[in-house]
Image (cartoon, rainbow, N blue to C red; front, side, top):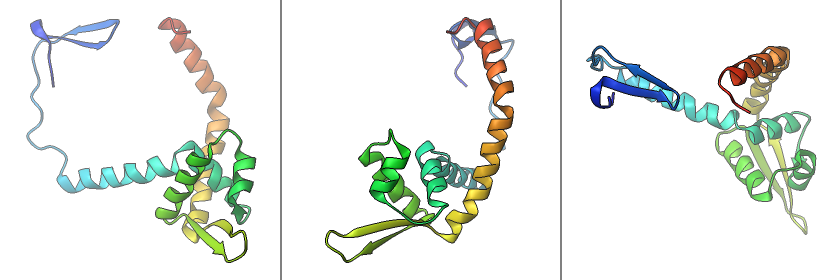
Length: 150
């Protein structure tokens, strides 16, 4: 922990806390295997929690779609971002990419079994967000009024 002179450590621009003593980090930190597991979970959650990945996955839940079809349906996503999102989902095993040897080549994207399993928790999280949105907005408004945020 970094402590400023006089044992004062700013938490945010409006708050200063005077510390009575400096606390040393625990000698028994998180075991290495747990740290590694956490990093793995974070990497998975960052992929499936990305807004574009969620939208693409939900759209693919109805069946295979072509790249331009997805782009039109999502709106606001750049071609590059959609490409990166689809590659990431494919790399993680959530989506398959099938190229059909036609002229021009036809490419379909489809959820794998693993990707279809992911839809249920995504829907549950979406339902939770909708159910709690009024309370969250109220809490945000209260926080912003206390902390002078616009």
